[in-house]
Image (cartoon, rainbow, N blue to C red; front, side):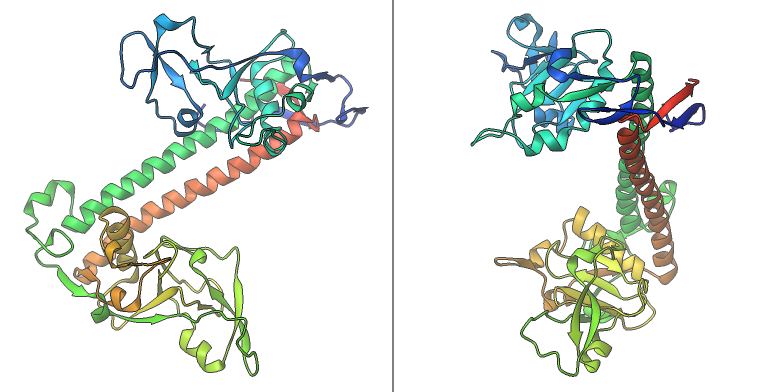
Length: 434
């Protein structure tokens, strides 16, 4: 299902409830004990595990594989008496480990010993509905594990869970709606990943050949530089030739507050790659002169001195007045021969993908990037029109990523809301056309 299309589904709010041991539920729902309606079996480690592909093998389903979705181990089919086989409709629950209580479905293979396979034992319970019910119990199961060395699901708690049981037809409808939202979220995640890969490829092209079509790269004359191959008409300059660099103020609880003003400031946690996050703002006291010297102006570039060393973003006057702490460097262009977004994208490409500058971080107890080392960075300086074009291309890709990430967040919120309301019967499905 490519989109969340709920237009053909008619919902209504339930008004008639009965009191049950797990709270109010619709009158036609039952409550059953989980252990009475399921069969379970714990996985076990097979006698033979292979590290490469052979004929007639099955994937070995470890918790790491389910998390990373990368198959690296296999089990020969001939050893089918020595393992627990999982089919696509089976529910997998992690029994041991830090993620104990997490559940998965739609996998096939050989189950590792840290997990259990769950199957309904009667026709009045839908596998998918059961799967979504168990998702609502992850926090409970994960927070109340037993075991001193390795945490594992509390067996008595798990099997004594009370599960609300709508009619089987309604269970199937609930599962359909939740699956539709989940599939849309997963599709959005794939779009985000593909767009990020596109951005990475574009960066390599743009910062090697400039903003030229792929078909014209043979026409671009390149030169070898300290920072890699670049078009011959690009300059390479030291960062301090282009920017004034100023470090922020150190936060101190012992500093006198007399004749000082309380003002907001940015930490490294506020500075992501090409994005300022203001969900949490900190404050400290500045003298009027200090704040005037350290007050951010629209277009200032912020570079992390600590934390994720070198992470760079542009200040866009997100709030009226703001300063920054000493773990951030503020770069302010000396003249108009560089575009701030061009530089910010270069830093992202140079540090994350080309692995430049990383040895310039002072690696003591806490990795950091001093002002003197930052000033010594060699950076590319194309003509202004090319800088502008490169920044525009990469900004458009970032806008696409941000839009998809906002959609993913909206789908996550919708899923949580529908999961709660459908599984408690507060919202019910009156009619469905699929």
